[in-house]
Image (cartoon, rainbow, N blue to C red; front, side, top):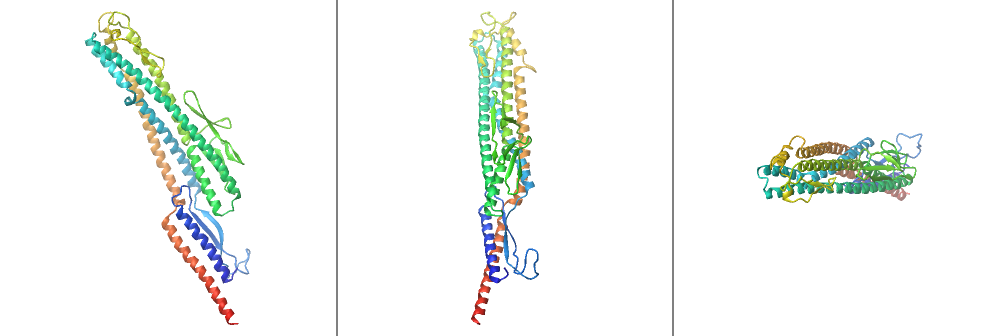
Length: 441
């Protein structure tokens, strides 16, 4: 095709497609997952030429090779890996922060109750017959028990909340697996280099980004761009060969989460699903620690109170009932039943109460639990900050290749508009030449 009309026509067709491609880029500059597209063009084979022989001066116009997406597979893989770590850190930090709030004194008042209990016991050593102080002592006991129940209820609610969040996240993950298989079907039918193929590839990459942020996955691609997806690490097939294998989540009685695929255990080490599992483990650990501490406090304080005698000379009664944080309750005692005395004096047992304060007393142990929780949250916050910074840097590097630069698109738009005008002018010259030749006959 070396005639002027053919050359002009091929230029109009190619440059019109190029202008349309630039228009798509500009329109989708803010569309998540859209990769910049560029029309690949090549010199057309001129008249008398073939794919084996080409003359030096036989222009044949321009042919469209297809659409090229501006992507870097290494940068994409790095972005997905860091995104999964950042989502894991974010999910974990979210629930650890809620645990810290549930255990804080502002929420349950346990630390304040313990301090008031020992302070009131000290005051009773100076005035053991004071009924107001005796009532305050019992009120402190009730505040401590109420605080443990409040903390236990909040932690139990968190376990349910994490389980619900994991169930919802697994449902979204499985829906994305199904959508990815539909994209695979479309890619196997799409014409190479077409706009439809480019759109399908954009959607494929978007789904892979989402799946990678939810859980660790490993992707491989065939010649059509269709993906085979496996779980990172164990390599269990999730999508491939027309088969989609959904994952499932199970919550244990204490709230710990476990994942499975095809009935077999699935270890998820990254992504938001991993963060939810780690959060569930931490909540379960804190619930167990809270129950142990409640039982120990009750036993320790009950034994100390039962060692004394009340205002009527009767042996002291237990201050608490219940064997766990959720069931801890203050015993229904009257002010006269506060065992302030011992066998030798009217305030001897309250003096013994005060002597309990030390390295292993209830106040110190509770403060130690709070300090450990604060350190865990601080470490999680530092990890989250580092993971987020790393993910942002990887995303920026990826966007540097795939993102739309409107200035560049404007320059390309002007260039192809001029090329289109030149192709139109070529057709006009051919037309005028033909008219001149015909009119001279």
